[in-house]
Image 1 (cartoon, helix red, strand yellow):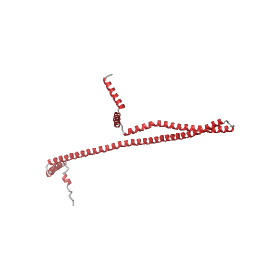
Image 2 (cartoon, one colour; image 1 turned 180 degrees about the vertical axis):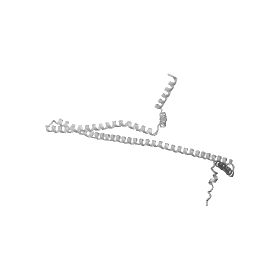
Image 3 (tube, one colour; image 1 turned 45 degrees about the horizontal axis):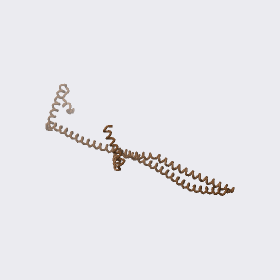
Image 4 (cartoon, helix red, strand yellow; image 1 turned 45 degrees about the vertical axis):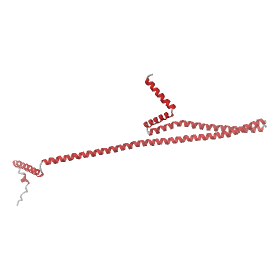
Length: 254
């Protein structure tokens, strides 16, 4: 056996020995183990586990109820048997009296009658108690079944709550993401405004480079005059007359 295997076996033996002989060590294991379980399971999973454990006990409880009911039935049957025996003794006693049976026979019948009466009274108590126990056990089973039904309903409601919690968290995350996007859009709008401002500034600089407003108007006028002159030359060459003569007002004929 290797040294590592020996160390592992010694560690396991130490844990087992501590768990057996040291209450504090058992408490430590229970606390640490409980924390590990809490960290590794959700509240809903714990509820389902508890429900499954309780449901697993139902068959044993049903068996117990069946035994108590069987005991009550047997006790009642014994009472019936004793009652029948008492009736038979009464018939026997009448027959013995009719035939003038010996005194010792009559005495034996009377003693058996008295013993049977006593047994009947005792059996009545037993049968009554057995019936009460059976009823109580049956009621306990019914209450357990109802309680488990309510527990199951609560688990289903809690499962819905868990789903609702997840939906609310998703909705909150979506709203927060939308706010973040809107913030980013607002920042982008500011950048767009800066771009527009820079463009207008460039346009203003370009216009300023062309001179003053008067200079620009005179330049446009000169361009227009040159264009009109060129047009008039073209029309004159083609015999179409000048544009200015065509646009002049016609002379009234008398």
